[in-house]
Length: 75
Image 1 (cartoon, rainbow, N blue to C red):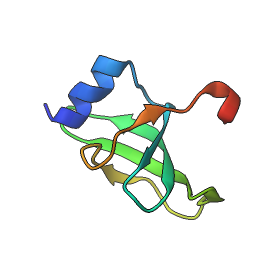
Image 2 (cartoon, rainbow, N blue to C red):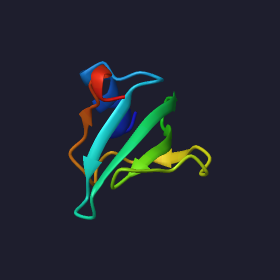
Image 3 (cartoon, rainbow, N blue to C red):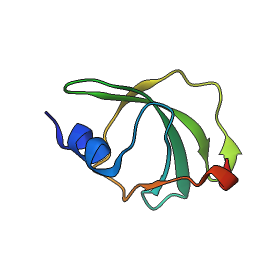
Protein backbone atom coordinates (compact mmCIF):
# COMPACT_ATOMS: atom_id res chain seq x y z
CA UNK A 1 0.00 0.00 0.00
CA UNK A 2 1.36 3.41 -0.89
CA UNK A 3 1.81 6.31 1.50
CA UNK A 4 -0.94 8.21 -0.33
CA UNK A 5 -3.47 5.47 0.39
CA UNK A 6 -2.28 5.20 4.00
CA UNK A 7 -2.63 8.98 4.42
CA UNK A 8 -6.19 8.90 3.06
CA UNK A 9 -7.20 6.11 5.41
CA UNK A 10 -5.49 7.76 8.40
CA UNK A 11 -7.28 11.07 7.79
CA UNK A 12 -10.65 9.57 6.83
CA UNK A 13 -10.43 10.95 3.29
CA UNK A 14 -12.66 9.05 0.88
CA UNK A 15 -14.08 9.36 -2.62
CA UNK A 16 -15.65 12.81 -2.91
CA UNK A 17 -13.31 14.44 -0.37
CA UNK A 18 -11.86 17.72 -1.55
CA UNK A 19 -8.33 18.62 -0.50
CA UNK A 20 -6.35 21.84 -0.84
CA UNK A 21 -2.58 22.06 -1.00
CA UNK A 22 0.05 24.54 -2.17
CA UNK A 23 3.30 23.49 -3.82
CA UNK A 24 4.48 27.10 -3.95
CA UNK A 25 2.50 28.16 -7.03
CA UNK A 26 -0.83 28.92 -5.38
CA UNK A 27 -3.40 26.61 -3.84
CA UNK A 28 -4.75 23.67 -5.79
CA UNK A 29 -8.04 22.00 -4.88
CA UNK A 30 -8.53 18.38 -5.89
CA UNK A 31 -11.40 15.94 -5.43
CA UNK A 32 -10.64 12.28 -4.76
CA UNK A 33 -12.41 10.11 -7.34
CA UNK A 34 -10.98 6.67 -6.50
CA UNK A 35 -8.80 5.06 -3.87
CA UNK A 36 -7.35 1.76 -4.96
CA UNK A 37 -4.97 -0.64 -3.30
CA UNK A 38 -1.93 1.16 -4.70
CA UNK A 39 -3.09 4.32 -6.47
CA UNK A 40 -5.10 7.44 -5.83
CA UNK A 41 -7.17 9.08 -8.58
CA UNK A 42 -8.37 12.66 -8.34
CA UNK A 43 -9.47 15.55 -10.51
CA UNK A 44 -8.40 19.16 -10.25
CA UNK A 45 -11.22 21.45 -9.12
CA UNK A 46 -9.27 24.72 -9.13
CA UNK A 47 -5.78 26.19 -9.14
CA UNK A 48 -5.08 29.65 -7.70
CA UNK A 49 -8.83 30.13 -7.34
CA UNK A 50 -9.48 29.56 -11.05
CA UNK A 51 -11.89 26.67 -11.79
CA UNK A 52 -10.33 23.81 -13.75
CA UNK A 53 -13.18 21.64 -14.95
CA UNK A 54 -11.61 20.63 -18.26
CA UNK A 55 -9.10 18.07 -17.05
CA UNK A 56 -10.10 14.44 -16.57
CA UNK A 57 -9.23 12.54 -13.43
CA UNK A 58 -5.72 11.21 -13.14
CA UNK A 59 -3.24 9.60 -10.82
CA UNK A 60 -2.14 11.88 -7.95
CA UNK A 61 0.52 11.81 -5.30
CA UNK A 62 -0.04 13.60 -2.01
CA UNK A 63 3.66 13.67 -1.10
CA UNK A 64 4.59 17.01 -2.70
CA UNK A 65 2.22 19.21 -0.68
CA UNK A 66 0.69 19.47 2.75
CA UNK A 67 -2.96 18.67 2.05
CA UNK A 68 -5.91 19.67 4.19
CA UNK A 69 -9.55 18.82 3.79
CA UNK A 70 -11.69 21.58 2.27
CA UNK A 71 -14.45 22.52 4.70
CA UNK A 72 -18.02 22.00 3.46
CA UNK A 73 -18.66 25.74 3.76
CA UNK A 74 -15.81 26.45 1.29
CA UNK A 75 -17.15 24.20 -1.47
